[in-house]
Length: 285
Image 1: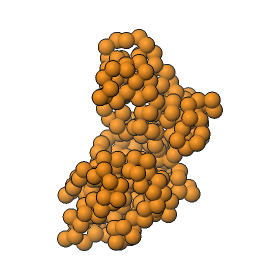
Image 2: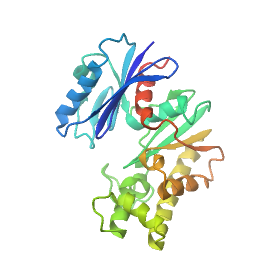
Image 3: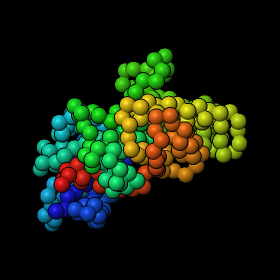
Image 4: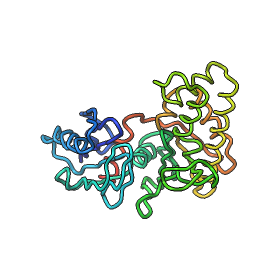
């Protein structure tokens, strides 16, 4: 039973064939064009690469909010109201990319074998997934929007309409803001990269700032663990995958939780997680 998994990210679309054992093959990767409508066409073209294969199902992981198989909004892609079944011309299972990655890590990656796995991805924002018994908890459709846990009602405004959301205090957007303020030169680099460089260079203000962000990260993660009581926590996303002081600080902070005494693992599947998770969601047997 072969499944196609498609991971539609902010800059690239990646796809592959996934068999019943979770093995990935025939990976196709395309750069996404700047025009939002053309991004959907590119995804259709990638799916056509597998026209010679009999597949059981197709899953699509997408950077945005999803309800009833429709991408309701994606700031990264500039898309809204996209019905992928209609656009791709066949039934598809659609889910948020962080939840897809979480499902893959829980079933095939760093959380494999644990009864309940909480996966948190640290990128521009903070995403998450709760997997119990190998099944993704979906709720009413937006379960896993952990980045919008409010930690400070008087904190910085968030795109969701609230203030002081967890991702505004500990996600990449927060690290970018701090890095840009501490190191205004080197504008070609994202602020998070400038912050990491300043910490590596031994600048005390940068080190203190990163420690504050890491403490806020641990505060939010601990709150989730108090409610969800996972057996295992897995941390993924671009900022955890990249070696350096941000990864080190966040992993160290995650080891100081009050409400979780089990293991905390860095994610293991890398760029394959979204494709694998999309396929697993589409063909859960």
